[in-house]
Amino acid sequence: MVPVLMLTAKGDEIDKVTGLRLGADDYLTKPFSINELTARMESLIRRYTRYNQPIVSDVPHFKNMVINKETRTVCINGEPVELTGKEFDLLMFLASNKLPIRGVCFRRSKSIRRSGETNTPLTTIISCHLSAS
Image (cartoon, rainbow, N blue to C red; front, side, top):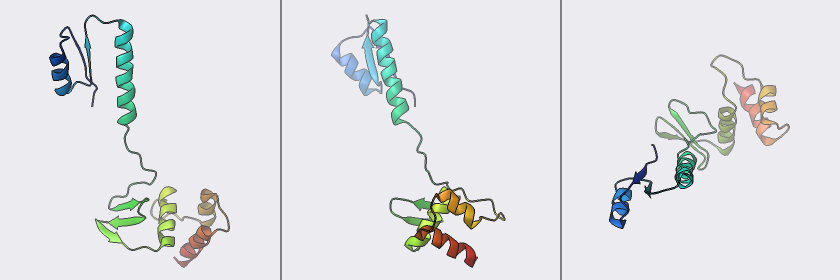
């Protein structure tokens, strides 16, 4: 989306209102100073770059899986998956630390180093889950 600044000689209120209702983001009438034009353009650019940022997730997207951090839920192919709190924590840890490619070993020591934690409930869960597989 591109911001629209109407620059026109029509300065009546009805013209301004019509221009804004037709989709203009700002309306500037002649005569104008270069400083005002520059300030309005900078304002439009600032607003559009700030409020039109792409949504970036800190959890990688998986083809068929959606992880919702706020509600602590997981869906695969649109179907909810029941996970315990610990299982959800482990899934979030693995997803946030970029799961390795299939067939590559994900070592316990590396996973704990990445988490920056040692001897915590999460690292114990990692140990239990990884040693069980």
